[in-house]
Length: 134
Image (tube, rainbow, N blue to C red; front, side):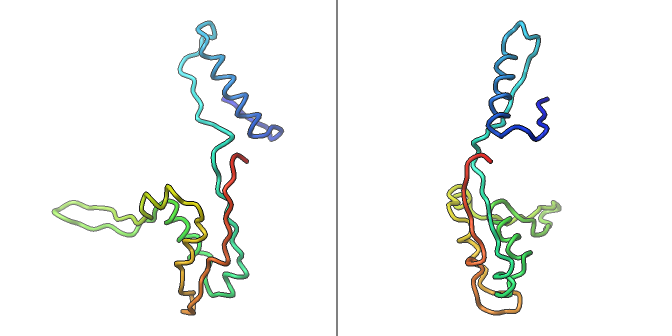
């Protein structure tokens, strides 16, 4: 197990992890089956939500985070029975939109109704930025 005490960067950990796995491939090491899926260059999405703007527009944080969660993943809706079997129902964005998610904040423009029923868009309360690594 590779453990960091907080002194190293993600790039350092990536280099060390792959060095360890590479060294374990040597038959003289006595180790087998080592593998790592860690990489310091995985794309990451940083989402900033302006709570004050959202509140001013009457859009609760729970609605914003639920919309992002459904768009980026899925949300459980309910169960239904059919032919003596129980099925779970999940809602999610179509795979094409999840794969090509350039600007997830744009999807929040679909939250047109605020909590109080006012017509507004929450998209201006959300910003997003794609980065690589940390």
